Length: 307
Image (cartoon, rainbow, N blue to C red):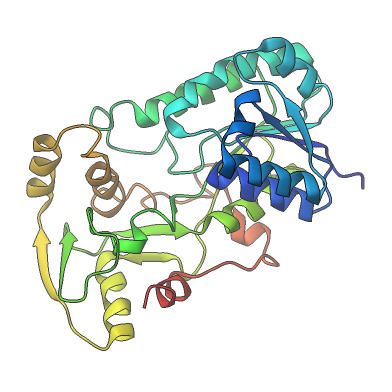
């Protein structure tokens, strides 16, 4: 089977770079759309050179330039957008360009987090999720073939501190547990998210569906997470429980955007927004069940790197 030609927008970002690498590794003809200004950033320039050396074709353009966008899209079959969440509405121009190009067989928009249609923090998240949902509705209204990737939390977010906002490393003495500590959340390493994303892009089973990532060994409550860490450091931590009401008060007291980590913790570990629903009955598919061949980093393995 011929491999789809893949265009990645945001290829110099943390996730986008891994997606581009995974695309190349899976032998997809891979293109990266980058701004002219990118070459002046040493880190981004280094990433682009690395991708180019690996076989990616670098195209100049941006989401604000429809002509360059359509020209790039006409060279590919699949487009994956991995721009930052705060820029997610910039994808409106990309959706228009996809319609104009008329050749895209699959669009994977920039979501890569919790399902924006399932979260229960409306009004608290400063439109973080409603903006993503807005792009979904636009994609669906324009009848663009798509796959939504709902990978929950990246391992690089919250997990390095054992879900302790403000800390840069896991605690060794005292730990805060939000809610009753029994609600389960999900963490997936970015490089693994990229591998699952590339596996899904030519798969008819993921067409016009949300693909969730809930890998076995990566679904933990805060109590379980702390227990695993305690076993690794050979020490019991002092536990301070913060009730739902107290957490909500802290969210209200803390200025935006500093309160967003608390909002995400409330969403995942109090409301259960990553795990309260069944994937299959909600019309989605689960990536680790579709692609059992893919190896991924477990939470326990990741915590070993923090010792």
